[in-house]
Image (tube, rainbow, N blue to C red; front, side):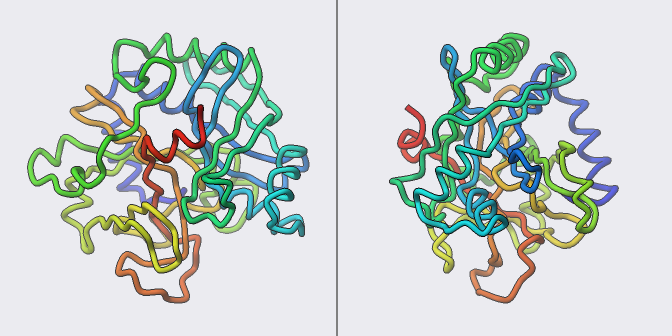
Amino acid sequence: MKYTDAVQTNTSTYAWTLSNQLFDMMRGLTVMLKDTDNTFTGTGVIYKVEKSRAWILTATHNLHVYASDNSYTKSHGDLKDKFLERGQVVLYGNRRAPVQGTYGIDEIVFDDEDTSCGYDVCSIRVNSLPLANTVSKQLEQAWGVPKGFDKDKLSLYPNVQELMGKKTQLDKLALFQFGYGKFTGRDKATYHSLRWRSLRWSDLNAATPKPVYMDKTKDKYENVLTFASSDATSTTSPGDSGGPTFLIENAGAKVSLLGLTLGANFFVDKVDKPNDAIVNNAITILSEGKVKKLVP
């Protein structure tokens, strides 16, 4: 993730207005995806914990990137089998519980078993009591401050159309993004560092163009929110894909998981152009109906 000094300053200033518990919860639930050979990096978010199992949401196109980098076919079986065999989830923890652990993957579920990335979200299940216990402890530390978790899973923002139509109190809404992507040039050494940025909804709406929500893009990506100020100094980057974007309301009185970093190759004006795909600020919006197909 790349951003200017001004964005970094604004992020730090805004982060100080949030409770430590809320920030630690968001940071601690963001995981890195990698392979055993360290040739691939992606990001995901722990969405649900139940007993000894944890479900992680990430971008389906992460599996396509991994397949392409390793000359695998993009067939349904190959995408699943290869990442099940070599993929790993890395939990770095947070300031309160800086536990690091690396876990194998037990199951991958695509939307309607479709690997085309139309709805660019899939779930990864990890069967690990240590992972589940670590996450549960993090949630216990955050519990009661924000309502970010609904029983055993993260709360999703209920209506993106309502968000797009808001006209008042925009200054009380902010997006908070997390990702393990690179942040300088093409140096792979800059992977594996978790970065984050805050974007005030009022600032995004004051920019040109304003945020745009699309049910489907010309590239057939579904449920996409894209916003302005995307250039070489302000963009999500390779490795950030699948990372969470949280919507924070009233300085942390409520927090919802809004979407996952997409980074697809298209513009907010819906015109297909030859664009460098690493310069993009787009997320796939998560909805209860879609996610229910991926996580029991």
